[in-house]
Amino acid sequence: MKNIKRYYTLKAGPEDVFNALTNERILEIWTGDTVEMKPVVGFEFSLWGGSITGINLEIEENKKIVQQWFFGEEEDSIVTIKIHSHKKGASIELLHTNIPDDAYENISDGWDEDYFGALNELFI
Image (cartoon, rainbow, N blue to C red; front, side):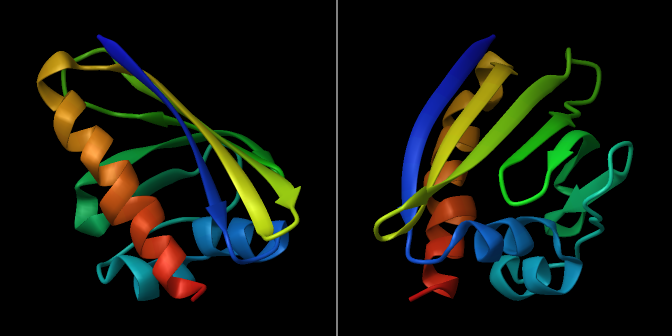
């Protein structure tokens, strides 16, 4: 099992970033796929048409999202996204723990390209 820790800067305020990460309609715009998401603790979410599934463990509006991601029979991993104000908009601190070894490269690229890369395009 592996971990990822990354930092991203987005040209949008923390409120807009939080909304883009938790609002189903906005998520569908920047992911280009079906989404089930509500900013509610205990909500079982689905992103990219079910490619990513899990449950919201902690929600701190405009500041923090903690999710448990499901990997089939593998032990589940924890994703923590912290959102901070930044002079250019918002800075994101990502910590993704307990990633299965065989999924690490795909997950790592996905964070940079599909997740925060696509989200960044939304705010340009």
